[in-house]
Length: 58
Length: 100
Length: 104
Image 1: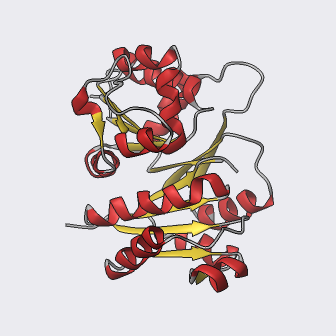
Image 2 (image 1 turned 90 degrees about the horizontal axis):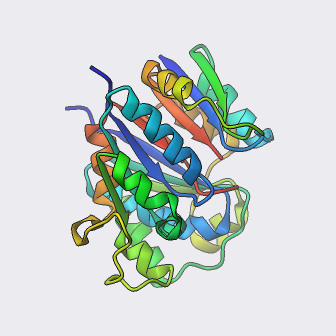
């Protein structure tokens, strides 16, 4: 099971706790949308296609 | 056929009530649908929202909250953040709804 | 063949991301369906919205949300048709029938 965590803003303690539990003993990757430059959407779509589950956190 | 299990989570009060309606919409489509209110204390629900939650519970879904006031005032089911994390592991779809 | 992608939009702020991801997914040959709900229905007034409708395979909005956000349901946003002023069942279709799921 591979999980992709996408973040729309800087993860706070609530998000971090949930991510830690959800990804425990599982493969995971992360992608940040809250960057100063335009995100690499091409790479993001590849990562979404490769993941078994994508979670886009607040 | 395996049924989808979906958990929607709401952290901002402006999104919670509609998010509950959204969970009900999925339960009607034959999915296990859950909602969780985090961070925010909500006003007492109107009759429509109370009915939506009752219907959702009739369809084996539920609305939880990590905030005791929402449990007391609106009858939401209590859950801790750690319990929520464990519950999310069973979900096929996890939806952080709206903004925080 | 590229996987299909369903996007459930609950925030207005994500609209540029919806466009960027839709463009990238379409360039890879993906089938993309998007559903806007609640406060995100304000996005229908953004100039990016008709562009997204043009690129994606299917775009619909929750008509009940649109009405509750203060719009007239007969005022159909550019890029949509009356049939695309829809219900939460569209979210159900995204979950059931699409390979990949994204909420924004």
